[in-house]
Image 1 (cartoon, rainbow, N blue to C red):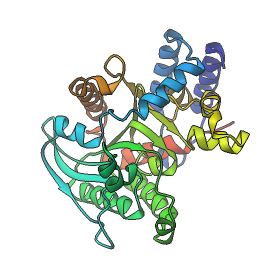
Image 2 (spheres, rainbow, N blue to C red; image 1 turned 60 degrees about the vertical axis):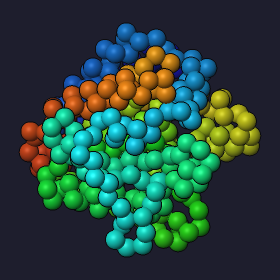
Image 3 (cartoon, helix red, strand yellow; image 1 turned 90 degrees about the vertical axis):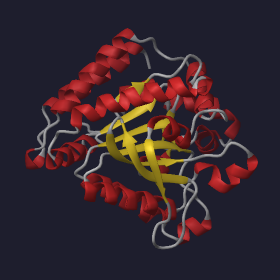
Image 4 (cartoon, rainbow, N blue to C red; image 1 turned 180 degrees about the vertical axis):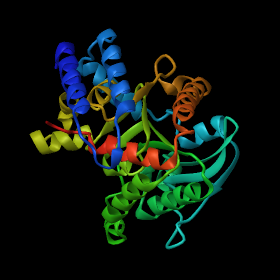
Length: 313
């Protein structure tokens, strides 16, 4: 798709949102402003090629890319990690806890991958079981009770698809996480910091502000999975990625994210401290815009925002 076609689609979407009638007095004024900002950004940005899109896929999966705990170490003070779902077990693929972010107490949930073979096995490559999502929901409910903002860092190929996970209610648990986040009356800011894969990612991405790092990806299926379905050849992954465009620039154009977080030159793996500072600055900017909003208004606007996605008039 050419840059002109992208801009045309965005302008059409802006026009449709302006004419949309919503129930309960909900409005989309903030979303309209952000959409206008997206149009301005795209007018000044070059169109990505297939090779550049694949480079984002590779950087999102880079083994040295910062993970949730790397950002916690650099962004959160007085960190207290919470464990267990109070039902079955603790899932190491999910990190949850409370701490102080720029002077305010926040609850943080996020996926955690591993660096070496031993840790990757322990963390299950960042693919959480239902126990992990229940742990995250418990932390979000704690935030709701004590009026803490929620921060969510997303980095997973997807929720674990194993037999045990399905037996423990994986699909229903992801749906309940969506439902819980739609009901929360505290500010929520989420950011895709690496791979944002399928329902395992979206389950903690139903937020007031959805950010995405410059070289992250956000997609309903992996490029390899898409290629295997369409061409019966996982080796066509680069071709699939060029077709469905999981990179940040195109996610912004589609309206599934609100802003792109810049990374250090060459990717976040080149400078953890700078990457953390850039991420912290972006989160602070978004939190400052919404933290004084009444909870009922946040909830109405959040629901309206996600109901409007994919809307065709």
